[in-house]
Image 1 (cartoon, rainbow, N blue to C red):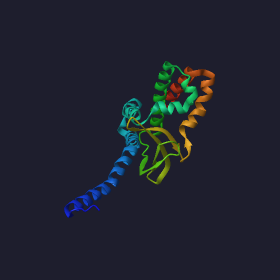
Image 2 (cartoon, rainbow, N blue to C red):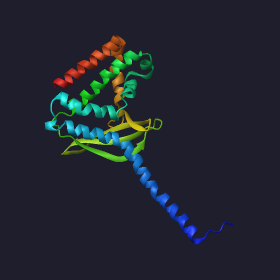
Image 3 (tube, rainbow, N blue to C red):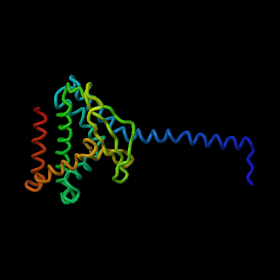
Length: 211
């Protein structure tokens, strides 16, 4: 039979209590790490919709670095093109298409959140697992002052090299943006190849910048 001296037993119980108390803190830190990219994106979108945020180019300089940081754009592009089709592209084609897709992604946000839009962002503090692999889902609501909580946007995040990145966006909780883009991009890739899709994306960026 193991007998503890009272001081030793007290120290053991204290150590256990500290360990148990630290569990919620560790969980909170993990949750914050997952939600941080979405929070950064919401803050950047709020900034570019301010009336004083400047021209399209000035707003691009604000948003583009955030998009680079919080998105895994190559993963989104791969899903938007289709994994098998994407793997058939050359390294040069992937690089050129990724650059055009990045500009398109940023420009689409700029078009949606114009100066004076006054959208309100409400980020959920809860994180839930995705049905796919170890991905996680973070929800934010976008609405107006008189229409809250507004539209639900679910971001799918995946951990890569210790950092969480957005790899897809679900509209209304179930409509995959990558899947929708795959439908849009597919016919263009079939008829015009990579160069054709790049041309279409560049035209869309031009339209977004002029609206």
